[in-house]
Amino acid sequence: MEFDEQLLIEELKEIVDVEGVLREAQDALNRNASAYFGAAAAGARAGRNYSDMSAMDVAYAFADDALDALGGVMRLDLVADFVETVTWTEPFIMALLAFHVGMYAVAFLVRRRANAMVAFMFVIAALVFMTERLNTWGAANWTKFATQDYFDSNGLFAFIFYAAPMLLLGHILLFRLFALIAKMAIRVSVAKKREQERQQQQQQQQGVVEPTTGNKKDN
Image: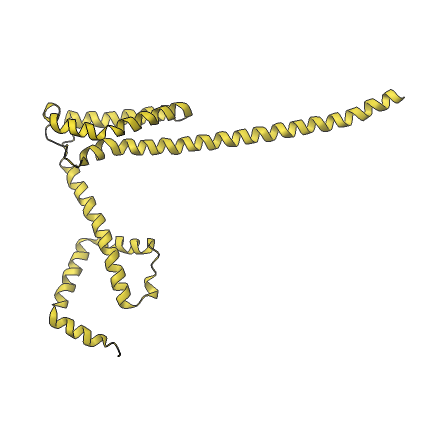
């Protein structure tokens, strides 16, 4: 039995307002242009080649990618809306920002000392581990230091404004530590190679001097 695409379209038109749905979809894409391009990027990351697909496969694949991209946009919108509710001029927020600036300043000072970086990373890990307890304490005592209750049960504020900057800093220090270790390993390897070359040169010089000394004794 052959597939009659035109007949299927006509039957769909009788069931739903296809043109209306398409208009709504177009309006949605116009309102969410970033999601449109995000869908194409998601498809590319997934290794899809739209040029090799049939029309129906492209529609299904693109719809799947568009839904994923729209989900990401919606999550970002929620975070953006939450950030907009923050009173940036209140002392609590400014103190929290100053705390993070101080943490990054300390990280800059210890960036060339492996032992200090490791110790500082343990401090960061301990502070991040306390996030949940601090969020619970803040929810119960926010009236003492803030103008509004930032501490929801999901810990969104605590993660964005407290834990996330320190997690980023911890990763930066970790990569920096790996770079220092790699640099030290290269230096040790070069030093060993130079020492081996020096020993070989000494052995060669001794091999040349010893026969000469032996000839003089024979004479």
